[in-house]
Image (cartoon, rainbow, N blue to C red):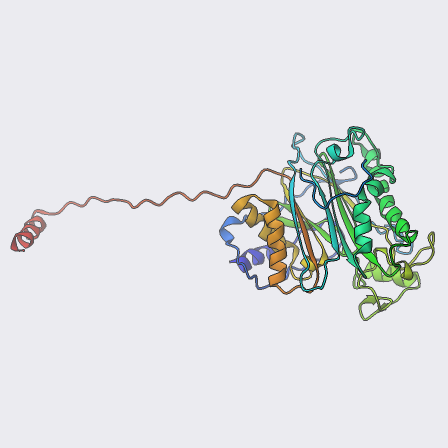
Length: 399
């Protein structure tokens, strides 16, 4: 049943708004089959693409409610997908789950803030809703991931000079993108100057910022964000791995090497915060960089939810499989936290070998499961001929 659902999407093709590359849908044996009856395999209609689209204390993990490759500016082109329904406003709710998996300890960290304006204070005059989510996948220890999480509000919203206005225009969106890119580099430099963080410790990072109908995703590393649009998976970030040709080219032109699929034979990613033992002094271009790719889009009424997960999820599940699973779960119980937990459990069943963290962010009201009308038995009346009636009477009287 689940395979039938996935085969449908193999024909549709996994939609992309990122790079000109084909993302193949893997067919995995799902330990928890999904009934294809719940799922509408709809192809997203063509949309016009255009370039529109303070607390400094530690933050708890969950607060409810291309330029040249040498310069590393290979950001995914910003795209805002317009909609005729200008009155659409996302309805935000989210849930998350993390698990150590088969590792000895969990080096993942994450942030979930459903109401960013309330958390930062009234001085930030942004359109509602406003929300912020992040996943940090540490390596070489958990210090780097924990540092970025604990200082996220200062790094991403205070020090990065994030624009504060309720008017969103092209200039604002450009400023927003630049400030978010700056935040990644600030966090990277801060760790270089913090003696408490070993130079061999680092973390990948992916952030998602929602301001009104605008969604901004920034990524350095191999965490991934996937948007569900009418049941179709749209990948919102690029995995920065040595096997990705633009990254391999950038690395080699800056003097780095790819050995056995690893950067300089050591690291499985080509972008990360920290890991200063592999980087040149601040201000120099290094094969390993913390500069993120940034993607912006305008959310529409067709956008159901966003999945953010570390590579432990995506190593064993395709984008479409994850979307199918979450969509099914939402129709069952409308609980994004339980959906995130189910994603993690599914990855564990598929024998992932890494830590696991997933965040599910819903943008619309829950999709009600199609009601199945009760099939009441039909009563039919039959008339018997006179001869048949006499025969029946004779049989009854004889007994």
